Image (cartoon, rainbow, N blue to C red):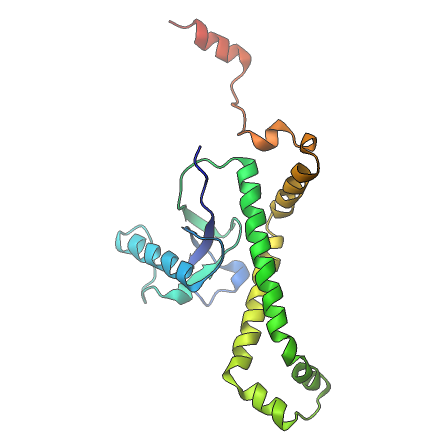
Length: 209
């Protein structure tokens, strides 16, 4: 069986005025390991293709990157799902993909926090209502200030959202258990779900002409 490629999920939302927790849309998966502008553009291109084919309703004002919302894990807000691959994924494969995504998001969260650390004196001064120094004022007015804070908010939110996705923590526990002791893993976690057919039904099929 070929290795399943990692994918990133995006929710294509029509009405952006709806609060994030109530948004509904079409889930599109593109090949990739993390949320990037390039992957968002891939999702947008696929959405435009579906829209032009009449498979995507709404969007009277057209489609743009604003309509493409990063949706880590399996989103319950999806009305339809378009996957990058229809190949059946085994539980252990999904667990590995979840862990790869989780670690990637954790790395980006750490990098964003490290990047924002030099801004801490400005934030602490703002919290206490203190006057900023000339150097701090210049730093706060620099265009990079807002970009750094935005990246921090985005990376922390994406990581936390994925951590809270049902099944993600079970996935990392499964991988840890395999590394520590593969005897802790049951066949059901590795093999695809068994057929619902009973032994009697199978025997009847074998006896049929």
